[in-house]
Length: 134
Image (cartoon, rainbow, N blue to C red; front, top):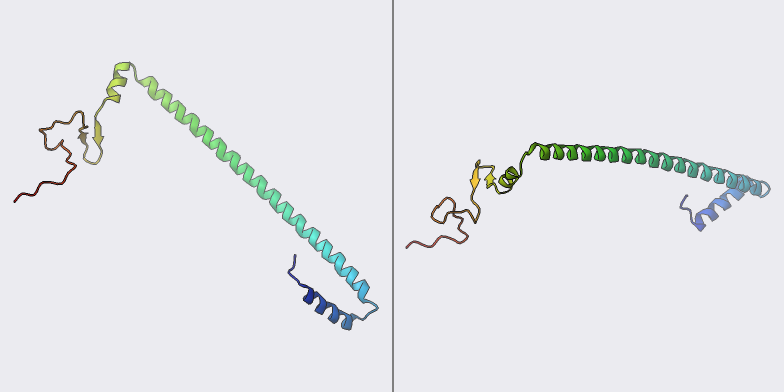
């Protein structure tokens, strides 16, 4: 518990021998050891209580988070099911899957490589640097 080395204990013992005297020193050492052991047991009990309470609090928090995730999972499943039920026919599914991509910044459809018109300059995406015009 305390970081006391041999020489510190030796110096404390010599001082106690001079202050208390040789007759009462063994009784004093016995009482000091008894109080030290009581203090150590008390401190370890308090640590155990704190650890137990911290663990119980963490378990409660983890269960609450787990319940929240389960609720969110059920909400997502029900939302997905309602979306799937709102699509009445498979032709609409194909239309949604094959729909062109939309650039949200410009709010216009972006041409894909397969659908790009090679003559349309706005649809062309040059990957090379423009040629020097001299």
